[in-house]
Image (cartoon, rainbow, N blue to C red; front, side, top):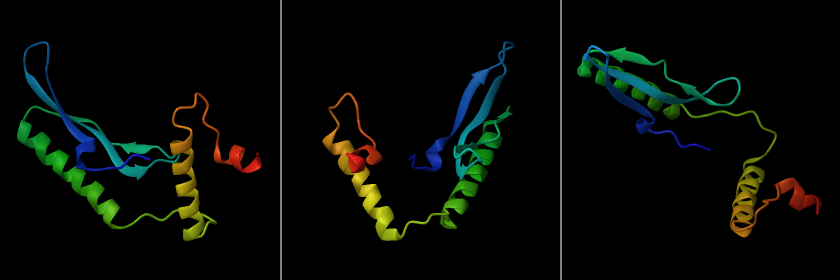
Length: 111
């Protein structure tokens, strides 16, 4: 899982063919779309760097606000079961780090 922080939103700098500089804000928000992927920031280009910095700060604040509200996921697992599964995945990664084929948790349990 990707940890979101304010550095996920960047400002790209470039020039038009005429040599006019532009500043584009791009990146990802911590919210997820219907497919479970991180939601992309609506890209915007600015001619003024300060405008781009202001927009970047607004988007970062939106992401921090979302994270501060907490995340609710529908699951049938208790906190202990989820914690056990999380640690089981860690053990799989540790034990099979060198293996060309890493088994899934289901493969290990049904073996």
